Length: 118
Image (cartoon, rainbow, N blue to C red; front, side, top):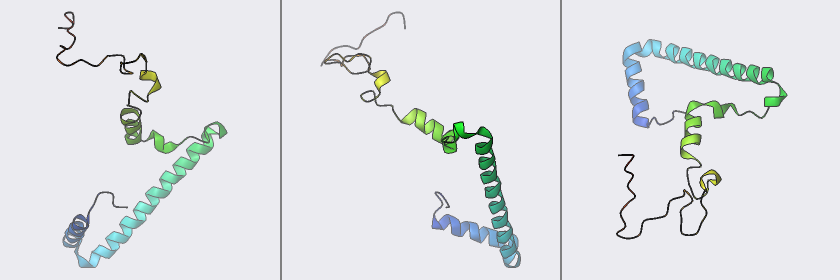
């Protein structure tokens, strides 16, 4: 629930809130914060349900979590990046060559040099 917050951070937040709001107002502030968080979650769930109902049955299997920018970046940058298992990058399947298309260098062999690129 608290993500990456540890017990020391939670305790520090509690002490700071106790000093800022005081012991008499802290329970009311916590109650109000909990109520507001519940309302925000209900609004988000309502928006999801409304989006699903308006998109119709064609998009019934749409995973809204895949539209999260963090999930999108993780999926497209870090998954499927192995050239040995990615079928789109296996362009040259000849023996002794990597699936990316370049042959490994032999011991003492200089790397290729492109005069037009430098």
